[in-house]
Length: 233
Length: 95
Image (cartoon, rainbow over all chains, first blue to last red; front, top):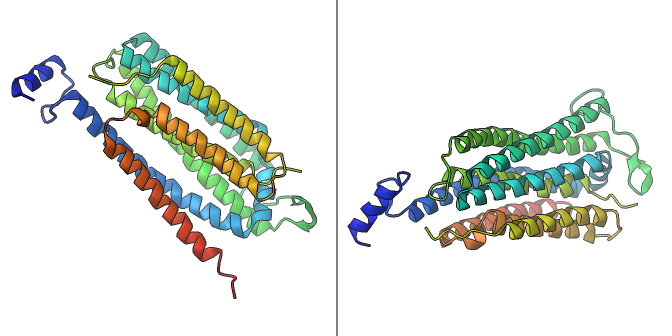
């Protein structure tokens, strides 16, 4: 590409930094960088998924008993809420691509509201667990009942506490990511209200969206793994 | 810029598929499939995750092949983590 063309594009697009040849290249570099960050996140959550797999394999019955004590309705509603927020994120990015600046803000605000709804429902579930004494490490910890379909085998309290340790560690780290995501999207909303994002430049929106979708994917796996162990009669 | 722009219709279709997957996984969990219960649950979750990655995260339309290579590599190493860990833990009681 002749140098004059590059300069011409740089002149046209104030968001293009001088060390990139084209806006496309700049965007690809930013996207790859974001994906590399998400890869470290896969390994971060991956360690917990691995620990979960080992203990689920060893103490399957106690994990099933712990899983059955969770509120399936709230868990399902939260999954639906989070998937809805992923749709609004995808639509916000699309609105930037087509230059509909008002709709970007609307979709971002909807995303934040859905994110907060998720955290609210999660807080309710945590409160219920505290009320039911299902908090691992507490001397009052007690998971009543027996192992599903084994009425003669009571729950092993130590193994059940491992289930709840993993439950709180994994959903807790996920919730922390959601809180960070809501903060991130508040910032993106503020920038979008100032009209920063449009067809020429929306990289922060796209990368913020990648983060949000990643957190959604983590939940897509957490939901069946934590809520749906051996639920059938 | 030659950026791919997906239609609203496509996004809504993906969203409906994700919702259907959520309902399906809850229903499947209440049916006794024996050893296939966790397999079905993970298959549905993986299908949902692939839909999100390809369409919501625009990986299907990424012109940078390096991005795809990075994602596949990460999944591969994550599976090595799980496979070698379970190769250890699941054989400890062997005599």
